[in-house]
Image (cartoon, rainbow, N blue to C red; front, side):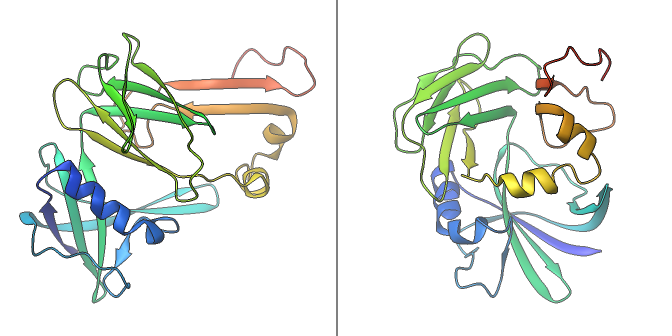
Length: 231
């Protein structure tokens, strides 16, 4: 069992400023340890809950992933999770939001595909913007395209502001490594990598057993043939 304390931020601005403060650490990790140079100060935050969590480990092919499972639910908002493991404290920021957000960016454009996870419908009429920039409005299909320059080494912070509800904050980093993508992305599936162009995305990173998973992308034989019908 793991002792976990959850604190709430008063607003999106304080949550975003804290994310930026720890940008150097977030480039290589999703958490910050208590003894890092830049620590979290919880004195100005409100304690939302004290719970006992557990570690759940998931294996996919060669790789292992560990998840901290919390027993309680929280309302929409911005939070700081502090977990004590083996005498050390680890911090991670999280947000709870009804929006499902997919963002793809190039050097001069960013595309957002937005949905309401409660209704399952596209999130129309939402503002999509880079932090400090001017917004564009998503259409009836939930898509918004933003023009700009998005090449900062630390990545780009994007904001999605729906007509109702909390703003969704997304940190999109610049990360592309064809070597690791080729040799490790298909660790046990080199036949697929060698024979097909693959560009596939799921509509979310984590799903529950009863969820419907939507797949978007392209699967095309490298030799130009029609390929197999079934996937």
